[in-house]
Amino acid sequence: MRVAIIGATGMLGQPVAHELIKAGFATRIIARDVIQTRQLFPDSEVVPGDLRKVAGLAEALQGIDTVYLNLSIKQNEKQTDFHTEAEGLTNLIRAARLAGVQRIAYLSSIVMRYQGMNKFNWWVFQVKQEAVRCVKASGISYSIFYPSCFMDSINGTQRVGRFILLVGRSAVQPWYVSASDYGKQVVRAFQIAKDGQNQEYVIQGPEAVTQHEAAERFVAAYRNEKLRILTTPPFLMRLGRAFSAQANYGWHITEALNNYPETFEATQTWNDLGKPTTTLEQFASGN
Image (cartoon, rainbow, N blue to C red; front, side):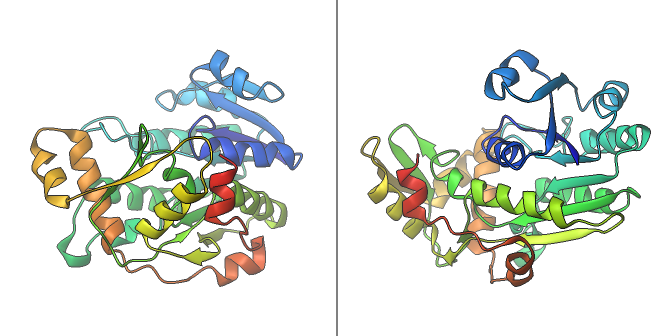
């Protein structure tokens, strides 16, 4: 199988790309910054491509069987901006049809289901839900993954200097999963996918823990430097919503994460793709 990857340089994209490469897939990474991307993946084919340009995408996808999409909405994006998961995804689907791509694989989210709960309404989740609809309506076979919280976010988006930043306290227990384990599951999904078969998998890790417990365990096992947990009250971020797009994003995603009633749904995923095994301690000691 010849696999193209869009979004390979990000926090979640890199581990998945490395797992696909390690598994022996013929990989082609499509990126806007070809030089920097080649430095990250010196043994893979890297070609230019931009989700704003259909013709260039179609050229980059020539000869590809499956395209894997790791797209996201950045914290400073506005609702009226170009979004990779909206206009960009529409362009990608058009290009995939032109190039004869047989499968679209898309990293979605489980917490986007919080849209509509407790009167919660956020345009970002509307975009993500519409993205799933578009992939399903594309006429191309698909593999869609709905992950819980990634361990990688603790040392990524939640880290500010030597602090792990948490907003409020929640009794909700997400099933934290490492991006590397998720990458192995993507590999397996591609290996067992039959022509014309659609796949949907909920991605959850080996155990459910609260966000604070996850951060505390990560900090205790992290060896590179001494980290501390900083918990801020939600109202401070809520006050900043009117002045900062990042604060507005942070408040909404925290509201969803703190309240989405996650339950275990990964039985079929584990049966088909294997059970994730990385613990928070193992993840922390390897970073």
